[in-house]
Image (tube, rainbow over all chains, first blue to last red):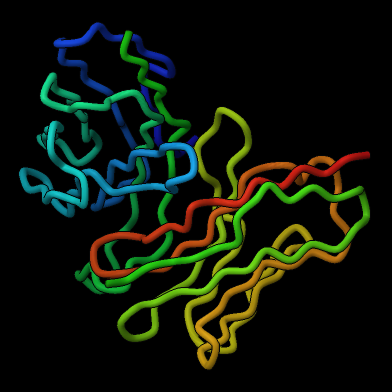
Length: 118
Length: 110
């Protein structure tokens, strides 16, 4: 079945460690996104990518890094520089319409990864 | 800047009661509007959408109408079920992203 797969579902990290969250999609979508979800704050955009080997910072990119070496994959690294990393992380993808990203259309989400810093 | 405001929860209803979750947006132009639903421990699923003014999105008994004059996209259902218990997010399409409201927790009691 087509979809987005995030792993791991749960992850624990000690302070000072970097961790990488995996996101893979087989929907043949061009665009991929990482959002962070905190209680009472909705979803906030971390990074997005519209094409392989290119990505852009979102609203809260500090302390995070990404890569887009393949169309299907968009891993997120939470670095030790991220001061409050405990959160639920959601990966999403979407097809590009008319070759632009204005007026973004529907996003398709993975099941999420819950990161807890001990 | 662009933003989405939705009513705070939790909203607690008895089964078969009517539901309205308010959502208003501030955006440049005429964004596409969405309602997503999130069940515990899961990602978000698209519930319904509308892409232009006066469009009505509907799915699983839920409805929402794109009201340009009031910049609103309120979610409604005539008779809720226990299985509708979840967090509901309103979202608006902006350049390069969707902007989400803070979510509204709905709890339906039998």
